Length: 159
Image (cartoon, rainbow, N blue to C red; front, side, top):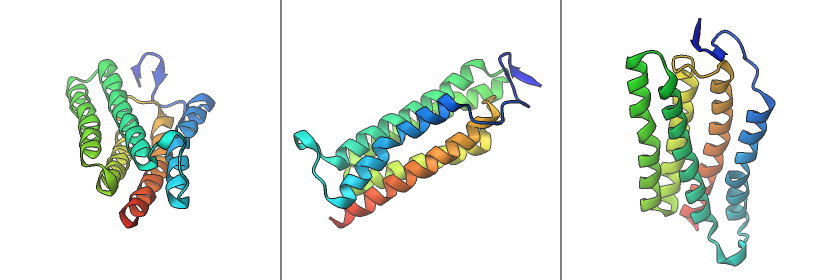
């Protein structure tokens, strides 16, 4: 069955090298900023590592909402398309809320949003016409980003 002309659902189970490499590179700010917080390292130019992590995480969560929007644009089922459009707006709104709250609670909100979105992508990817490998990639990236952000929330909460 082909949902999108260029992406047969039954094929492409292996994560392609470029999306994997880009996804892993995108974890660098999560890991680096969380590590800087844990070790108490100051960032250059007086940048606050917690604020930088919160801003980066909010940008990533918003980007992930955009991925759902993109999947919705090409999905053949109106019902699934509409649910994807609705789901696409939740991550940026959640990320904005995390930015407004800030500090340890904002980082905890962000971690919860990253985890929830990763779980959603891992379970719904086949129905949303995403490539087979997308669910595995999202689960891996969401798990690592969530762990790093949760650790940062704990460090900031106890600082």
